[in-house]
Structure formats: structure tokens, C-alpha cells
Length: 534
Image (cartoon, rainbow, N blue to C red; front, side, top):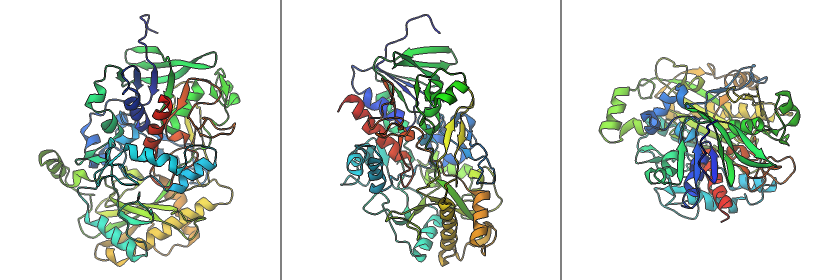
């Protein structure tokens, strides 16, 4: 540890992802408050981060990705599934597909019913609007002046429009706003982009003026290893950089924003978690909290792939031509695409209530194993995921060292009655139905996955077990609630200690019905107000 006195900070934020960037911006707006923002990854300077289509090139870049894998999943042929998570300023908002969706009001009303008082739809809608700067303008459901720019795509592949037409032929309605009065239907996604470039949380909330604030310090390449405590109160954070190890005190609060994997791991390494598990790793127990790491949920996704008989997909697009259009012609052409341009929501016959329970992301390219397995030729992919899985997994410690990744047991399809598998089969069936419509007749080639169109439900279940992957929405491992088993209370304060909060997707009691980036930013906006006492 350094001998020189540590600078004084009121708040130390661990993790500069979607939530951490929001907190750093909002809290440091008060010039009398000093804020330190720690990020384990590098700055967000790589051009592929900012060119939307560059996400396809980021898939194998280890420097901006935590590069997690689950433990072997018993219900998925014992496969270990890849979980990319952003390890860079902006976190996963710097490497995601930029789709802006919130879920539906019932998702948040469910949170409140489960004990997350103050997080019902009427409570959270103002904070969605506070964050959103929609280029269509503001209204009762949308913000028009928030820092997070939400816009329509500048460029759309013709195959994406064919998907919308095919889905309508299959009976789904058209919908040009999945965050409007109704979620059901198909259309083009609105995306977190500004003037044709990615608008990550870092772009939105850590702009030049914010970074120049004298009361805000942003430290990249800083890996936090534990929170320190005195008399049951969080007093600071131990972290390491290339220059050495440091203990940074926090005079007011420590705010964990590491996400559904890193936040529970850091809590456990700091002595907050299931007492027996902590002692097994040789860790002292600060507070016995069995819920830390439990309640893990994720959207499992099944992809249906077809060859395309025309060379119109992104599979063999010229990187040189894309770069020329984007960097020389001023953010034009396919470089502005988020790749998952179109999609939508559908209420299946198995839905237990009136909410859509399946989400689609259509990609005008062949995506196998997250795009890491490049297939020859041209094709297209339809992702479909079940929005409200009943299975629950957990995150546990692999060791007492921060350098060792946490163990992720997603427990996909592990629900007792097998409903999740039934829904994944339903996802595969509706995907095949949509892609069989006449809108694709003049471009449809041979099927790839599954390779046959006459599979029974049992065979489709085997297909799901063999090919399903994460669609990158882990939540729930530091669940908020009002019961004793909740990790944080509805003000996001860690139960059993003082001066410590968790603010990220890990606090969600259940998955919202859609992509999780916008809800995470909403949580951080409301958390900033709670911390300030607004």
C-alpha cells in the first residue's frame, strides 16, 4: 500500500459500466462532492466501439471483454456457455447491439409486488424518461432531452425488412415503437446511437465536460479486490493498477456497479455472502447473506439459420467499403448498423398472462456460436428467446482471489416442471414459421440450424439442448427486496452493513421482458436520486 495520504473522496464507484457512468455523472454534478470511478478495463478509445457495426469485430477482443464461461450446463448437453461482458469504460453498453427496449409495465409492477417498494412502473417511468434523449422527441412515454441518445437506424439491410414482412405474414402486427403503448409486434429496433455512432453509457454520461470536472476522477485499469469495513460500515476499496495496490477511503459510500457477476463476487470477497461458502474459501465473514450470488437469471436464446441465395447479407461485406462509407463519407452505410436491426415481441399460446413472452432479434448474417464460428457463403439468423424463465442459477467463488473468475452456474432449463424447455421449443417453432413465409421465397437457401424442417417437438428440444446460447442478459444475483433474504433493500443499500450499495442489473428481482441495458441505466438514474436524497 502507498505511504502517501490517499486523496479524499465522498463516493467510490466500482465499475464504469452502464450504471457506474450514470452515477459518476449525476453525483459529481454537485461540485462539493468528490467522486472516484474505478474501471478494471481500458478507456473506450477503440474505433470499433464507436462504429456500431464494429461490434462484430469486438467479439474476440479479450482486452474489452471479461470473457466469462459458465460451468458445464447439465440441461444443455453439459456445454459451457460463453458470456461476454464489457470490460471497458461504458461496460457492456460499449460492446452490445444497442437495442433500446425496456420491457412492459407489468415487469416493474411485479418487482414492487415482490417487495421492491418504489420500483413499480409508475415509479420507474420518470427515470426512463429522464435518461432518454429520443430523436423522435419526448412524450408521455419517452424522454426527448436525456443524455442517452435513442435514434432510428441510419441504414437497414433488405433482409431485415423481409423479416418484418414475413412476421406480418405469420400473423404478428407491425410495431414501430416497442417502448410505446404496446410491445407486441415486429419492426426495426430503435438504438442507442448518436449521429450514426454508438451512444454508450460512457458517451452519454461521461462527455468531455463531465470528464473535465475537478471533483471527478476516472481511473481505468483498476481492479478492485475487496471493500473494507470498520464496525460494520464500508470505509473504502482496495484496488490494484499497474502502479501497485491501493486502499481508497470513501467518506460517504462505496457503490458497487460491477454487474451480475462482478458485484456478487466482490461482495463475497469482502466477507458478505453465504457464511459457510466464505469460510470454505478462508474468508472472514462480515455479514452472513445467503442471497448473494443466488437468483441468477438470463435469457436463453435459440438461433435458426438459413443460407441466402443472393449476396445481400453482411457475411461477405467488404470491410474496406464499410470503413470508407463510415469514416470518410461521414457515418454512412452499413457501418452504422447495429447488425440486429429488426425484431420484435410475440405472445405465445403458452403465455400465462397478457405480456409478450418471446423476443426476436433478426440478423442479416449467419451467426453461429456468437459469430465466432464463421460459416461460408451468405445467410441470415433469427434469434428467439423466452423472456421470463423460471430457472434460477447462482454465482459462487472459485477461490479467494479476485484474479480467479467467479463460477457461473446458470442452471438453464433447470426449472422443476420443464416449462422453460417447452418455451424454448416454442421459440424454435415460431422462428421456423416466420422464416417459411413468402417474403423469403426468392432468397431462401438450404436450412443450416436446424438442418431439417420436419423435426418433432422432442427433436427440437434436442436441438435447443445442443445449440441454445445466452443472449447476454444476466441479472438478479444481488436481489433487492424487503425480505430478510434480499441482498439490498429498495434503496439499494446492502443489508447488514452501512455505507454500501449495489447499483446495477444484479439488483433486479426478475428479468424485464426485453434487453437489459435501458433498465440498468434507469436503475442508476433513480439510485443517484436516492443517494442525493432527492
